Length: 399
Image (cartoon, rainbow, N blue to C red; front, side):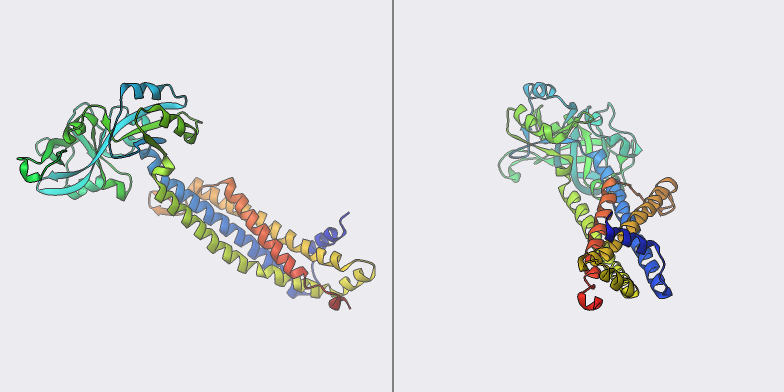
């Protein structure tokens, strides 16, 4: 039997003869539980918010995207297409062409990016699920789908064929602009619908059919700016990057969804780490109560300590008693705190008590990683606090 651990368990469950010591112990335990629960709830809330924020990017961006290694455009030949189809793990792919354009509608102007996509784009992304009003691109080649931010800025009406949208792009080539009678290409289109993702993307893109955009930019069939790829379920996109780079006759680079949204991922991860540090600091301050509570127990059990020392217990044994008591106190408080936090997280997921808007509950997400992070944090801080408190037992105290 581990003698110090046995005594520590007895001390943890027994009441002191001094009422003040009992109150301090209860407050310490309560603070530990609340601290652990608060840290878990905050991490779960941020995990839910992160997933909610990235859900828009997950619907908009593909699993993998092939881009030219140099320049903006590259040629996609039938041989390249055949090579892609031979790669295991690819479910579907879609070609696109993207360029900055000038948009005019009813004497209003806007600068955005036109993204020409082929008919397979819906099978690679879930863009059609983000349509706010109207419908996705149909069979008519002159249809476009602008973001709701562009639509509001220009006052675009859906399916308004009496008032077409004019899209202009500079003509490719060399020489001064003045040498050309018309230095730009233009097309007349109408909106079949508008999409809504987030404020930035809603003001950035206008989707159109690939063929009409290639014509607008003066590009040949097969000249594109990127290929969107959807992988099979269970396939790690990272494992396909090297195979894809080797499949093309021209040098290309392949990016995953995370790399396409590198700044967003970095921002969310930085915010998550900052929140963790802030609440860990609060937890550190709270666990100073553990040091105080153990020292009060040492003072309260002073006579018992002297008796155990006289019976042959070493100074190390006596220190271990209170070291284990501090660990048990923080571990029990941490476990109960995580259980309490998990219950509140589940309650929010099921019933949505806290709402961002009247129709949108605050997103919460339970993850095993957060459970381990909270328990590890409580364990490390409890270890340090218990070590500091148990060092208060000296030979002078026992003399």
